[in-house]
Length: 150
Image (cartoon, rainbow, N blue to C red; front, side, top):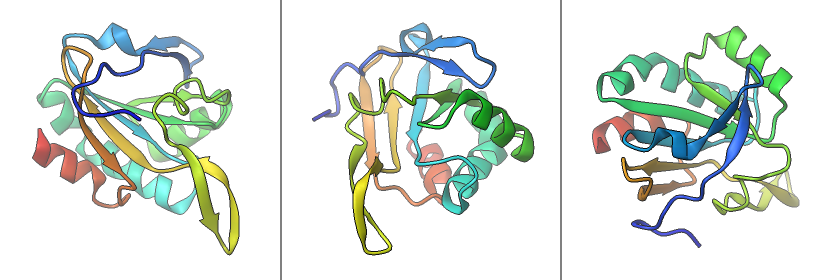
């Protein structure tokens, strides 16, 4: 179980352009790392569009925003283009980051129980340590809450 003050688990995943992105490359900079269930679903789209709308404010604070889901690189390309998402989207079909961050959990949807990504946001500080963990965030207010924290 990850806790505030722990070193954030490092990972390397492909972005929407197929480029490898490694978390430790962002040392010296704050990172908002948000895990979401799926591209083009109502809640995930609202969350991504809210981050996109406030992205210039994150940039002004020197903060990088990274979204991670199990979706493919191709899915991320379509999602980013459709909604003009300016931040990094990473593809994690093998759950290389999803599992170490503890966001792969049992979920109940429409009376069925299954495993899936629980919408969770982490703020990683300049030293690569977890500064804040926000579990089960609301897609419409997550980005504003983070800006208020920063």
